[in-house]
Length: 100
Picture 1: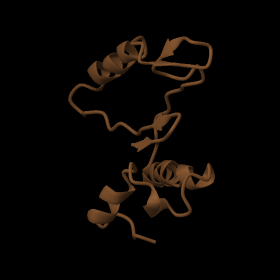
Picture 2: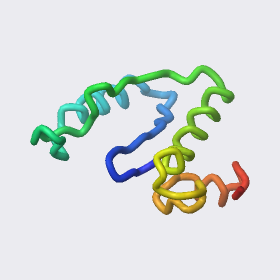
Picture 3: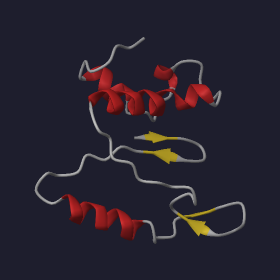
Picture 4: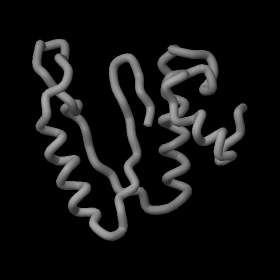
């Protein structure tokens, strides 16, 4: 998961034994007010939030790379490793991806 100043992104791996239960919990969470947006409304999910099933490891890797690079793209840091809230650090610790 990536946590940013104005939004969060996450990939959720559903349990094989009961994926529908997890999906229903996510759907319920979409109704929970958490933050105020610029219009003063309390929202957890952006209006353009969408769900997407990843089909394979290549697509999973592309999404992870996008999430990890997002703070650099938005000029919050110069390098992915500089963003302290990123799951990138766990991926490096588990040797899933290199530090650079």
